[in-house]
Length: 212
Image 1 (tube, rainbow, N blue to C red):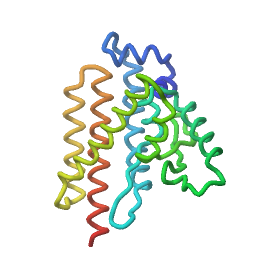
Image 2: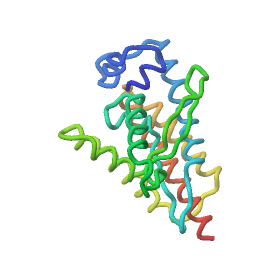
Image 3: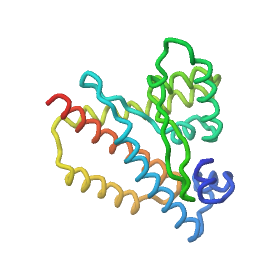
Image 4: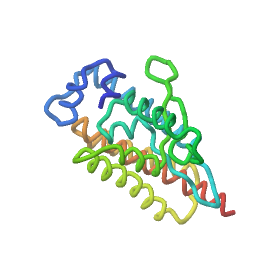
């Protein structure tokens, strides 16, 4: 929510009202939102492709730190600060930081390249242990659901699909979402679900190639 507000130039409470369906964005802000989600989708697809690694026929799955910040209810810059601090704490130990997160970048709406992290499930668990009470419990449930959705999608994809078939399926899901979403919150949730499908399709293809 903070990331969306920052990118389109409105206060985060405005985005909060949109997500709750209490207000609707005007035509100009809706155009900015559409552009933001389109660019986010393209960036996420590229980053997920780059971030997938194969180890003994198993594919590691990552969540973009911007998404993790949303799930944790934090500003992205705060989460980035926290992760850098964790890195300082862990330096000099026998722990492998890439087991938790991998440094990455994304291109912001203003064209500037900004830092981010690709975070593993272990990394999410690490972050969760630094959170307490209801906030920590909610974050745990959300990131578990995100990884569980990926696992379910992978389990359903036993047969390889042609790229054109995958692309057609994803396009149809985008069209369905565009036609059915009536609030920003529904659009936001729908895009996350489609992104999980994209990750699962990619992981299934990488796993099949590794096994061959």
